[in-house]
Amino acid sequence: MIGGRGLWPAIITVYARSRHSGPSKTVVGAISRAARPVRLLDAANMPGVNGGSGFPLPPQLSVTSFHGGQGFSATPDHCELNVDVRTTPAFNAHDAQTLIHKAVTELDTELPAPSAARKTTSPPPRC
Image (cartoon, rainbow, N blue to C red):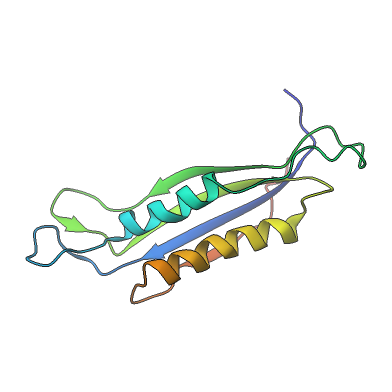
């Protein structure tokens, strides 16, 4: 295992109306909405290794957790995603933030909800 990339963690909280799961109208719940940014982030065009920088690893993005809902009879009002972005000299924290912001903006444009999705960043854990 090779380490050395920076860490830019983010939590994306996606909202929707909470309802009973069997209403007469179709409901797009928070879990269904949250699936969209996961797909967008999985398909993100991340740069490769920048030979000019001398840094041997590319940046990397992983959705590391997905939490929302409980039980069988209600659509949840929110869902949280944890996203781990590994930064490099060629793809820094600003680039990571821009990528996450773009996915959240696309979600809110394509699948509007009563509340916009929210992203929160936290400082990297200390080792």
